[in-house]
Length: 544
Image (cartoon, rainbow, N blue to C red):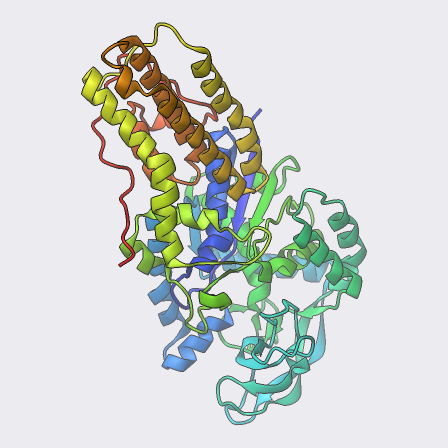
C-alpha cells in the first residue's frame, strides 16, 4: 500500500550564492529520497523556500547600504536557478515573504500565546552604543564560552555546535561598528520551552530509527535542561508581532523559519486548487515527515519545532531528522557563505554536467562524519567510477547491438544459468538498495548500484560477445539481450541519484516517462525494440 511522505528541507538564507556544502548537506539527499519515494508509488510533498528574514540578509544589506528586500530579490532567483540546473525536484520552493507565510506564522504565535506557551519578560541584550541600536544575535561575534572558538556567533558556535546567548560571549564585538556592546534590557515574548522538556525527552528516546548522532546530541541538550527562549527582537525586518503595543518588534527568524514547512504545504495546496489537501500531510498520523538539514540545525528540528508543534496541537511531529555533517572546503576549512569560502554550485554547473556533480557529491555525502570537496576528486570519480564502471558498460552494449543487430534488441531463445543468475542478482538488489534509500543511506545505495554494474561488466567480459558473434550468434544475442535488461535495471537503481542521464538512457531504451516512474523494479526491454543511437552518457574530464 502507498504511503504519504512529507519531505521538509532546510530553508537557505537568500543572502548569497549556494555552495556545495549546502547542496550535499540537505538538498541533494532530500531530492534523492523524494525521487525514490515517488518511484515506489508513495504520495510525496517536498517543500522548502528562501528564508528572507534571516539576520545574514540584513547584515549583507547593511554592508551594501541597500534594503533587505534588494538582497532577497538578487539571490532568490539564483537559488531557483541552482535547483533547476542540478535537478532538485521540489513540489514547491517559495519564500518567507508571502502573505500566507505571515498569516500562518502569526496564527501559530497567537495559538501558542492563548495556550499559555508564550509570555513576556525582560531580556538582557547587547546594545551597540556607536550605531545606537540593539544587536540581533548574528550581529555579534566573540569567543565561545565553551570551546574558545574566536569567531562564535551570538546564537551559535560553528566550531562546537553549541546554542549560545549573545550576552555569554567572551569579548563580544559588534559586526556593524566593531564596538564592544553594552548590556541593556528589552521586553520580549518568550517560548516556554521548559514546559515541553519531559514530553520531548520521552519522544526523542523512542526514536530508534534516528541517526545516532542526531538522537544523542538531542538527548544531551535535553539533559542540560531546556531554557525558555525569546522569539521576538528589536528589529524592523520580519513578521510583525500580532499584538498591540509591540509595533517596534518583529517575530525572530528562528521562530518563523520552521513554520515555513507548514505554510509552504498550505501554499502548495492552495496553488493546486485544493486548499484543505495540506492537512493530509500534517494531521494524518500515518503520514511520515522527514526533515533534511545540516548538523547546525539539529536542535531547531528535534527540540524547538517539535515543542511548537506540541503547543499548537494536532500536527504531526517529525518522523525522522536525517541531519548531515559538513562538506568542508579545502584542507578542512568550512564552506561558508558569510566568510565567502566554498565551492559555489552555479560555478560548478557552468563547468560540469549536473549528474556528474550529483554522482560525486553522493559519494562523499557527510552522513556520519565531515567530508571534503575536492574538484580533482570530482574529475577522478567521473573518469574512474562513473564512466569506467557504468557509462562504458552502456556505451559498448549499445554499440555492439547497433553493429551486429542493426540497433534492434536481439532475441534470447535460450537463457543460460549465468544469465539467470545476473538478472536474479539485479532483481534482488531492488530490495536491498531500496532499503538503503528508505533509511537515507545514500552512499550505500550508490555503492551497491555500482557493484551491480561491476557484476554486469564481468558477465559481459566473461562471455565476450564480440568474439562469439561469428561462431555462435545466439550466444552473442543472449549476452547482449541480458546486458540490456541488466542496464535497464541498473538505470532504475541509479535514477534517484542520476535523474538526467538515466532518463536519457530510458528514452534510448524505448521507454517514455510513464514507463520510468512509480515502479521500483526492472523495466524489461522487449525483443525487437529499436534502440536509439545514443551519444556517451558522460564525457571524460581533463584536470585542466
